[in-house]
Image (cartoon, rainbow, N blue to C red; front, side):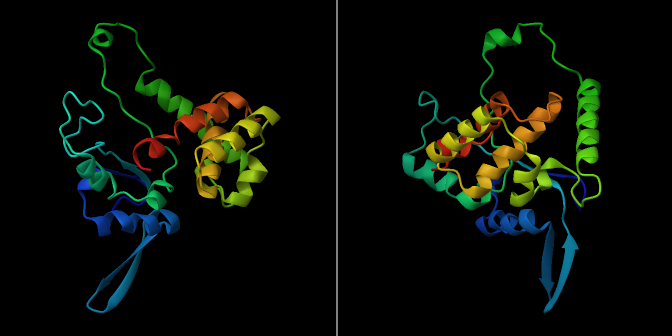
Length: 213
């Protein structure tokens, strides 16, 4: 039902383990096969997948003033989401508690219409870049295509190599950082991926190493 749309699963670790692990294949192949009465039927399942999860059963970890979960409970809860599945997410980021003083500020960010125009502009950049291919968005680049279309400056390449070694990224994770950096560069109208683009993309990849080790 989410084909060509968005699938959002809240409280992701609360789902059954077998259902969670099923997404490894779905996110890789963009299709799902269901077996009923001995018959297998395959459906297209190409969607943007968003999942939200608390860092522990009570939701307050690592704030030990409020979190009473044991390390075993925390490990068991987070352990329902495997490393190989996290590896298939392009972005892993943390939503932190908003300090009270920030609620008083009147600063305004971009509205929905401004963001929509920005996204449309970047889509057009990518459409032009991949004209004549079966690729439509940066997120669909294969490993080989990533090396072709993600041109990086020397400092950016050096930083990515350091992150690969220090964070223990997989090859898939390495390429996801490059693809995210490609999109960040597109937002800034830069055909060349700079060090700042890689640095920001790495921030969206390091959360899985903080909680899921």
